[in-house]
Amino acid sequence: MNTLPNDNKNIHIEIINTGSELMLGRVLNTHHQWLALQLDELGYTIDRQLCINDDNLSITGAVRESLSRADLIIVTGGLGPTSDDLTRNDIAQLLGRRLLVDSGTIERIQNMFSRRGTPIPFNCEIQAQYPEGALIIPNDYGTAPGLAIEFFPNLFRKNQQKSFIILLPGPPRELYPMFRNSVIPLLRKKFPFASAHKLLNLRTACTGESSIEKIVAPHLQYLVKEGLQIGYCARVGEVDFRLEASGQKADEILKQAEQIAREKLGEIIFGTGTQKLEEVLIQLLTQHHKTLGTAESCTGGFLAHRLTNVPGASAVFMGSCVTYSNDFKRQLLGVQSETLEKWGAVSEQTSIEMASGMRTRMNLDYALSITGIAGPGGGTPEKPVGTVYIGLATPEGTFSQRLYCPYERESFKFYVSQFALDWLRRTIIHSLNP
Image (cartoon, rainbow, N blue to C red; front, top):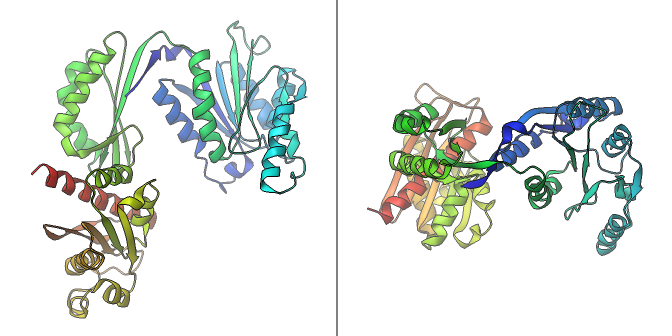
């Protein structure tokens, strides 16, 4: 649960993402979503987001337009050393600021490449330039520092309130920690709010948003009249259920709303904030000293990929077999030839033998298996594309569930893995609270 003062309707925020590669569709623009989420969780509201090309006219025009109305402008990209990195220089010219050189940044860049034992790349030191008066935001994961510029926008609008421009590097591995570690404290200092504001994001899996609304919304209506705001954000295999309140009674309203939501939704809720299902499952397995292995066919290791993205997963996740062919199902997992011949690779029986084989051969507490038809070909009237069986081997026995997921391959893999992870999560919870 996040808490901060709130008067965000009086703060106008715009985000500008620069990058011709974004406009060409060659790189996915994840900055829009990520920055919006970070700001929203802090209680700020974004008025406008814009993506533009790397050229002087686009950058200058976009920033000039934003300056006519925004109190805070966040610009990403264009701070590197190459000829298409124009953001720093264009904004300095627009604001009538000289470009100066920060000796501390030069020294940091030199030390970085010295430790690597490599020469400084051509023109890299140009990244030490900054518009006069700008605050330099250190970059612990790259060469280009961020910049924060505060000024009175007299030339752009009739408003004596100060405006703020924050320039951030484009690579996510540099932008994300810089925003969390340096920009957030700066925003809280420069844009304090007036009244209490609280929000809570409850994360749910494998239940549709309309079902969640039907289960819980009627019981929250009396709090809505008191100022509670409810929101839903649906994605493949998960729905975020958002609760928000402002004012003197914000804390009380949100506590009551959370209590009702947890009572009505129960184990449908798997986490809060931005927690991922795999993170929650790894934590649950670790707390209770249980081990897990996976056996995958149509998901091709995606389930294992999600689990191994979690730091510390090696304490409980022992490994995976990607058994795409029938021969591998037989040799690695002990699936019987008779089972494959009689029922087929995509069947309840095969999913059970895959999961039980993984669990017994590797001496695990739990094992998950997945076998199905991801498509676009390979389906039959009895087993159309999207058919999948998930097996779960536990100390109490081995079980299977059939799903129908007629999605394109990427969404298919995510939803199937989401269902498998959530099924195991609920199974463990039930075993702890029979």
